[in-house]
Amino acid sequence: MSHLEKSDPDIYNAIKNEIERQNFKLELIASENFVSVAVLEAMGQVMTNKYAEGYPAKRYYGGCEFVDVAEELARERAKTLFKAEHANVQPHSGSQANMAAYFSLIHFGDKVMGMDLSHGGHLTHGSPVNFSGRFFDMVFYGVTKAGYIDMTQVEDIARREKPKLIITGASAYAREIDFAAFRQIADKVGAKLLADIAHPAGLIAAGLVKSPLPFCHLVTTTTHKTLRGPRGGMVLIGADSENDMGIKTPKGRLKKYSELVDSNVFPGFQGGPLMHVIAAKAVSFNEALQPDFIVYQKQVIRNAQALADSLMKRGYHVVSGGTDTHLMLVDLRTHDLTGKVAEQALENAGITVNKNMVPFDDQSPFVTSGIRLGTPALTTRGMKEGEMEIIATLIDNVLRNSSSETTQKKVYGQVKELCARFPLYE
Ligand code: DSN
Image (cartoon, rainbow, N blue to C red; front, side, top):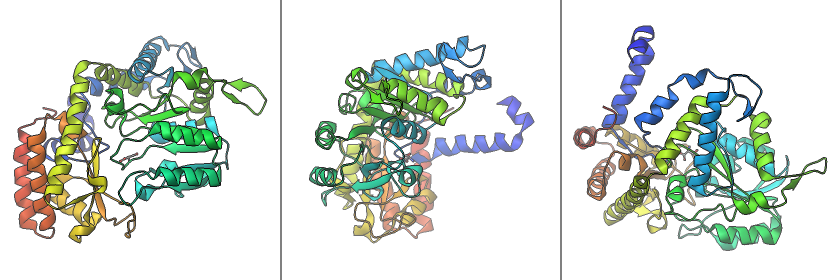
């Protein structure tokens, strides 16, 4: 970064400090990961200079022959990875992928059913502070006391409310989702079904968690969580959905789902695509197509299960009693702690997590009663079950002494030693 160091020392130093932070803290935020240097290189390259509104071979600007190569490769690799019939790789984020997807299936003001945010859902699945909650008439389902999605409730609410769209997918749910059961319910009430797989996308690509593509009209995802690509979004369409008759436009023409999605992403909601990010998406999808990606994802799940087991052995309440995926939700009410206090105490000790609402929470979203932990980032560093056991001990030590600065300092020392054994960006 020699040019940056000279031209903008403030930003140079902020980036250097961020590299140091990522290297010497334990990253347990379930939605984060560490991309490869190849992905970083593609993102930091000259494709950022190019305007390319439109799609490959159908652009509104000249000079797109090389960015077309990048986008075509990203689309084809995404299709292979997820066994999809169509992929739109232009959404700048998961939120924009969802926005484009919703408006491909329903209209402003329609009734939509999503998972309650406090039960593990996502802001863009209908929260009143998000476009989704403001543009649509939302109803919500949640989990049972045991922490599993309550399919009886899903069916009851769907029959009663007759939503036009059902959203499945979550940001703090540790169990596999039964997409086939959701589709049966959607068909019974005449609703479209959308899965947001932002969290488990990498596990699905590796074939370790069932794919929603055969069951959903549209599937959205981010590319930077378990999938380990650059920050961004994507919309995927399975063969059954794409070969279906499509949807009638207000002018009465039947449009295929791919046409609807593509025109909603651009020009519907976005302008020029981020071609440097799309190039980096292509690089990460190619990485995900290699056999060692499956080995990585298997370890992500093993590590999450080892961490959940170690915490439960130490008396912590892990919602639903474990995990099938890369994340877990720890309900701290048994330890008389809030998520807010726990997040800060752990951060002081070099362990980065996020506070999170737990099902049937009595605290506000700013305080919460839980923390969410995930293993994708630590697994990328090469950590395994043995390290998860050590990390559970460190977390337990900090949470049992949450106001002790001495404990936090001591644990931070141990965290740095552990991180040094698993170097990241050198
Ligand atoms: N904010 C992301 C997460 O942490 O799950 C989802 O968008």
